[in-house]
Length: 171
Image 1 (cartoon, rainbow, N blue to C red):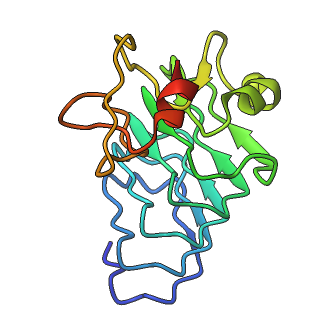
Image 2 (image 1 turned 180 degrees about the vertical axis):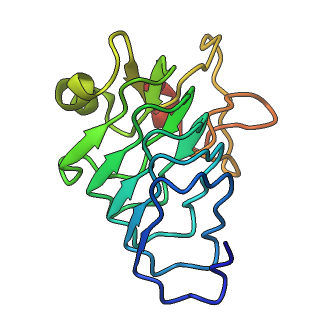
C-alpha cells in the first residue's frame, strides 16, 4: 500500500486487511488512523504529529512510540505484543480514551508517572507501572551533560541525560 503521494491524507481506515507493513512517513497531516486487526509488527507514527486518534489494536506490535504525537486524544493499542510503550508526549488529561491491555508490558514511559498511575492504571494489565524511564537499571550514578538528551533513557556515558531533573524523577 503506497500512501507516499497522499501528503494531505487526513483520515485512514485500514482495519482487518491482513497488512504486515504500513509506511506513514509522508503523511504529516494524518489526524485519524484505524489500523486495527492486521498483522503489523511495527508502526512508526513519529512524523504524524497531527494524530488525534490512533486505533492499532489486535496487531503484532512489540513497541510503540507516541512521544511526538502531542495532540493524541484516543489511543487503543490493546491486544498486541507490546513490551515497550513511550507515551512521553505531554498529553495527560487530554487523552480521553486509552487502552493498553492484553500486552506484555511491565512499564510505560510517561512524563508524569504519578498522574498516569492514578488515571490510567485501569486501562493497563495488572502490575504495569509508569515511569519517566523504564528499565534504567543501576541508578546509583547519573550521567548528565549539556549535550545529553532527556528523551533517551540510556543513563550512560554514551547516552547521558541533559538535565539532572529527569534522572532524579526517574529514580
